[in-house]
Length: 257
Image 1: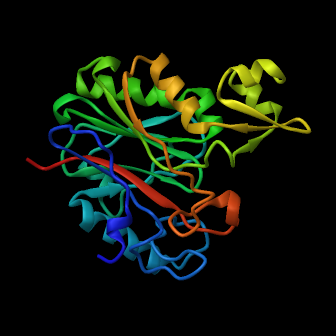
Image 2: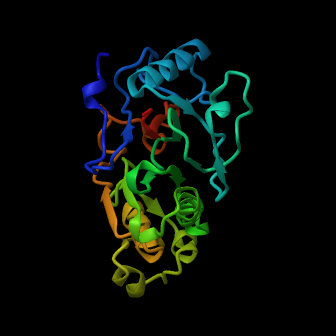
């Protein structure tokens, strides 16, 4: 499929687990959703979205299950039945499975996708981490659900961070600092995750904040998070940059044995 080589993949090695994040390449949608938009509620042609989602399923050889994301902390556990055409769409921002052949999927276009795997492919999970969900505990909730499903502890888990808005592009106000317990002024700068812009505005490091949350939850192996969706317009969708745009998919699955 044209453009698939541009997609991102974790550098982890977990037996029996597949994972990737799409970019804007490799699909059939037209501008401003060109071309691999998987978002069904952003104004794109429904047939194009369905075709792109089917292309994703073919590429990963697993049935992708999409969520209705609401910037919360709810986690849903899925199985093959959730991939059926008439299955209800779960309202959640994290998803876990211990069944092979079904993919946990989150969508993003500046928010951070977090993919997680238990040892030996016993379970996998994905979380959608915008600042609201992250500050409320969506990453920790996903780790807890994964450990329960996979019979492991957080120290056994590996995590990968996809592409998101970068630390030099994510302008926030003091409400975001407060949500993460950081003070405005020099104290916030010393946290290492916020950089003062001036005029009561700051730049936030979303990937760094997520690393902190995962580390505090006991996850010791975290990679990725080096791509900025805002500054690389040729590769990534960005809601903050473009307003009307598509959504990328981050997927993790247990390969059929």
